[in-house]
Length: 169
Image (cartoon, rainbow, N blue to C red):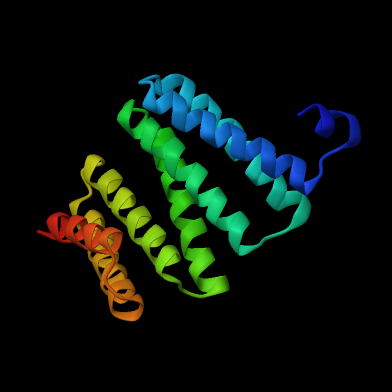
């Protein structure tokens, strides 16, 4: 952090700071302090957005942005802060879609998109928008099936498919 303040932002400095903040958020969450975790995830998110702004888009940068938005949105949702969760989760879905569209599908990218669609569907359901939720869940299932078909069965891929099937009903 001191290096960034003294020399201006560097890609490596911002990326390292963001990774540290992300890890701190995960530790705070594991320690059952979601409020502190949310602060760390939001700080990480700010740095990831700054990286995109200063250094441009890349597959890794979009992936990292989507992850930070996922973490923040999940905590906001659990805390009942639906307006903030809606913003974070919809931005996350956009980042995951953009990642797949701009850089092509991989098993990891499709799984990220499927999970983001599931969270978006959960949010729609909480907002009493069942048809919109079902559309998200169905698309998530299609993405899971595509990942399994194109990249093979993995434990995480099968878990994602099972979660999508449960949501679709």
